[in-house]
Length: 163
Image (cartoon, rainbow, N blue to C red):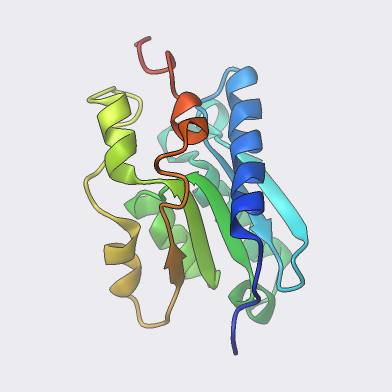
């Protein structure tokens, strides 16, 4: 069963808008959206660090919500778009949710270079591809697609200067 063809850049920019909203709401600037097999945005999630603690990453929260709302076949056709590459925890959560594809704007390596050793986000140097390729079912990975676009990195300007 093939995944649908989608406008990846348009959906990534929607995930960036969710991340921008998270920042405006005083949260860490991360956002995720879930697009179904028909190309409809069916869920979105801001970072939830403020309410769920260190595991409140947008992708992990969205994966949990998606599992509760959709069946396995629907999730296998779904694509999660995220403002930054999923960390190992988030990659694991979307793997276990059975989401068929993840597309991200900015790499974990670039994020780590921006954030540094901030205590709220001790970014791992572990690409999501490595985590997802270790599984027993395939998850398609595309990204980084906006690595050189200032829009993705700009979301983090000044955020991580505060401790």
